Amino acid sequence: MSSMPLFPHFKPLELTDREVINSALWLYQPETSDLTFTNLFMWRRKYHYQWCMHEKWLFLIAKGDNENIYALEPVGPPSRFEVTLILLKWLDKQSSSLPVILRADKRMLNEVNTKDIFETEPIRDHFDYLYSTTDLITLSGRHYHSKRNHLKRFFKDYQTDYQILSKTQITKCLDFSSRWCQINHCKKDTSLYDEHVAISEAFIHFDQLQLNGAALYIKGEMVAFTLGELLNNVTAVIHVEKAFTEFHGIYAAINQLFCANRFNHTSFINREQDLGDDGLRKAKLSYNPVRLVEKFRIKMKSL
Image 1 (tube, one colour):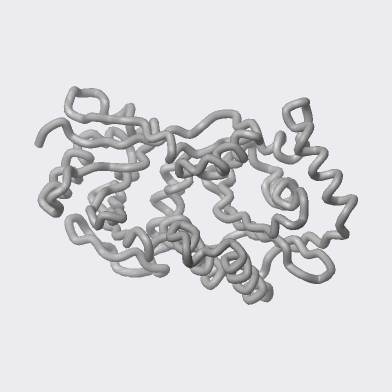
Image 2 (cartoon, rainbow, N blue to C red):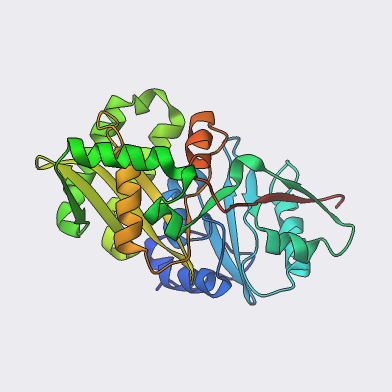
């Protein structure tokens, strides 16, 4: 474990920070997919995450595409009203832009909205999709009729081999990810390329991140993979899911198999956000989430 940075001395997030950060996040029992060490580590090259501790709270800051610094919510016990003031006032001195907290959860909102000091706004593109694990495994009921048909056709058309991922398959996963990226022209799409880099980070450090994963094979060739982990005591989060769409129904198959084989003991599955992508939003809504996990932008009305 690395040495503990204390506010206001932030340090870049590294793999050696996993124990202390993961402990703070798990104690909080988050609902939002952003608050896992894996997510922060995977995306650290894009968002330049840094962290420190302030008394009982974990502070996390990042850089947006415009290079402006913003913060994630302080992670720790209630009430976070005073520590939010401290963090935003510090941010105000670091950047010419207005200090802001992004992707804050509803719990955080309720703690800081006790006085007329903060301005808050829900950001729909950041909302996570939360599903019943039982629904994703059984796909029962009329809402899932088309999903059941896709699965039935997939397993009729293809002889598949479902395998739990281990470090012996990491090279295959990296090769698969590169081929998927080539087919989908990642180098021409910044968001897809950033995702490819993040996925590579997850696989390269698969063991150290203690991830759960699975892959589907057809005729000995990997055609889909997925990665996930526990988000809290009753919820799993799916960080990554990639497949070759030439195999009709493959996304429905890898989703159902992974939930059934790895996370059948959970109550819910968080499948992260859609970031405003219309196709992704339609696909996520088609699985009938039990609810959307709201996230908010928080800033001070005046400094």
